[in-house]
Amino acid sequence: MCSRRTAERLAGMRIAFLGTGRMGTELALHLLADHELTVWNRTTERTARLAEAGAQIASTPAQAVEGAEVVVTALFGPDAVRETVIEPGLIPSGVTWVDTTTVSPADADEFAAAVPTYVGVPVVGTLGPARQGKLGVYVGTADAARREEVLELVAPWADPARLRGVDSGRAAATGKLLANLALAISAQGLREAFALGAACGVDAEATLEMLDSTGLAFIAGMKGPFVRRERSTEGGDFTADAIAKDARLMIDTVQAADGDRPGSDLPALRAALASLEAEQAAGHGDRDFSTILVEGAEPTQG
Image 1 (cartoon, one colour):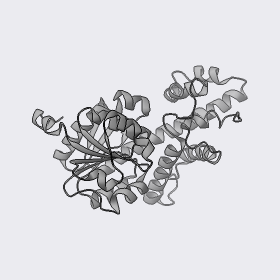
Image 2 (cartoon, rainbow, N blue to C red; image 1 turned 135 degrees about the vertical axis):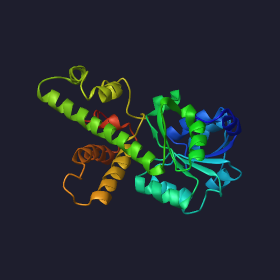
Image 3 (spheres, one colour; image 1 turned 60 degrees about the horizontal axis):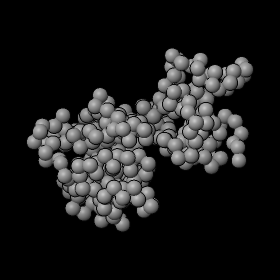
Image 4 (tube, helix red, strand yellow; image 1 turned 90 degrees about the horizontal axis):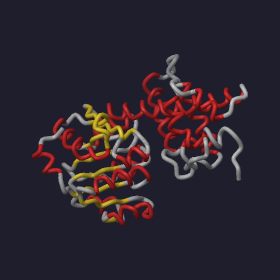
């Protein structure tokens, strides 16, 4: 962690925060407690909670970063990063760029080459842990001093045991993709467990109970409230669109590295992606990805 002098220097910083979707808003709210925030989002209505909490609203990314000491981005994916940050040369010289966007290792390399102050800071977890400041957070850069400063800055987002500094944005991106691969495959495994249970005459609740103490216990506990209809997939924690986008990044990464080498096709992840894409085609992409367990497991009521 940083020294007391570093922590004092980081207090009260002027921060530009670009991208105030579901996760971005939660991250920005934590920073508002100690810093002066100017926020921007392509859809201005999504800045409303932050405006009410005291953030300044910018009409353009360029306006947001003017005078900023740190720029934080929480965008939908690498293409949005290129359009918003890289192509217009948005980051002022010397200003630290904290990018929480989920990107591939190759994307992280590209961004670090374009902006020397780039720090890859993907977060691992959903909205509940984000609100509680209990996310997993990777902080990746070869600049050790900058890494320590950013670790201090983003500490309010993180479970201290899951706040990790790594030596590159590439390493941070890899950690995030591995976490989301496990999530996607586990959800597909739970979907198939329900199918097997149903074939054996066992209902979803009994299947959830039987999965206790198995490798699927974590995802069963996380998504059980959606399966039981205690929670709606509308406005959920992590959308089908978002995890499908991440799954494509994983598949593209492996294909770029290994080509047609046998065993490099990520078949389990492709099965999960097929389930997610079916929900996207049904118009459920903006719902929690547990839609593959609910709407995807039985006809949608409507």
